[in-house]
Amino acid sequence: MRPPLLSEDSIRAAIRELAASGGRVTGVAVRNLLAARYGARGGVARIYRLVRDAQRAPRDPPLPRPGAPAASDESRESALARAALAEERERVHQERWARETDALRTRLARAEEAARDAEVAKLRVADLGRALASAQLRIAALERALAAGSP
Image 1 (tube, rainbow, N blue to C red):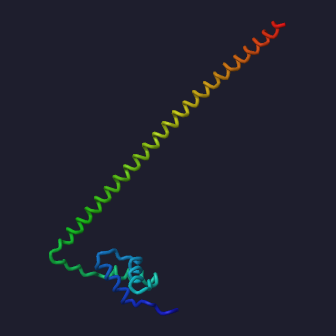
Image 2 (tube, rainbow, N blue to C red):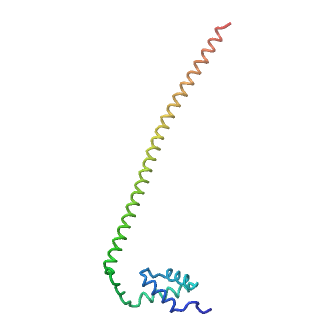
């Protein structure tokens, strides 16, 4: 087995940096940061073990920045922003499905109307066929009568 390209200290530093930036600390995020910084992603099992260990370790609460709103205000605002975004997505989703449902109902109504029209057309064709057969019989009878009456 070859020695690891990345030290555990560099991996822990990357985990702390992601946590400090407020980003979500995941194995994928840590591996992407390591790949960008050192050109090596690190072993999957090792990275995830170190991420899990870092999440279990007790953390010191971050110090508030001067002039920054309180953390509860930030989290409340971000929660409200996420809720507004979720509501907007749901509204767009509902509108889309309402449009699609309406379009399908319209297509179904047109198809049912076309089926009724097809039945009417079939009856009309049958009637015209019977009228044609009757006319041909009359023509044939008249031609025979004309031929018999002519010298």
